[in-house]
Amino acid sequence: DTEVTQTPKHLVMGMTNKKSLKCEQHMGHRAMYWYKQKAKKPPELMFVYSYEKLSINESVPSRFSPECPNSSLLNLHLHALQPEDSALYLCASSPPGDRGTDTQYFGPGTRLTVL
Amino acid sequence: QKEVEQNSGPLSVPEGAIASLNCTYSDRGSQSFFWYRQYSGKSPELIMFIYSNGDKEDGRFTAQLNKASQYVSLLIRDSQPSDSATYLCAVAGGTSYGKLTFGQGTILTVHP
Image (tube, chains in turn yellow, brown):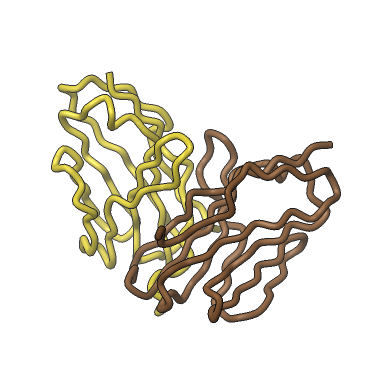
């Protein structure tokens, strides 16, 4: 089973709202990732959690706040977003490996629209 | 120079032909190489990974890696209209330890 699930599938929020995106995997993977993807562009890495600790933050604005409550769950808390933050938000996970990053499996994504 | 470059598209091939997708990378320390397929509005789906020089075959897909030339390719044999998608090359390891670096993607269209 190589399934990563994400909820919600779609989210519309105003600039003053607070919302959260959720990602879950039950494959025993120990690294989890958040990406942002704009139309016709490749995914852009935001955060990496390794063994439930934040290991990479790609200088993401503080209005995005990641959280990893346990090894299966990853959240992305959103607050005071801007319309330009509208995008497809992808979660991925990978098993532990010694090749820099092992194979990453992506979830279906959350389509976020900020009004 | 971009870290990962893919052949500019879009690429159009007739059904049944071989589609050839190419990717070059700049970091000689890179260790892992991936090809993802992404249909419009969907998330990337892993179709191949390769770590060692040479060819790796999986069904109609063949990945080729040449570390000396810093080149990785994906061949799709007997292309089908359902192969029409954006193909993303991704590289990991080296200075990008712990994360993937993606190319810009190549749009492939297979016409009947």
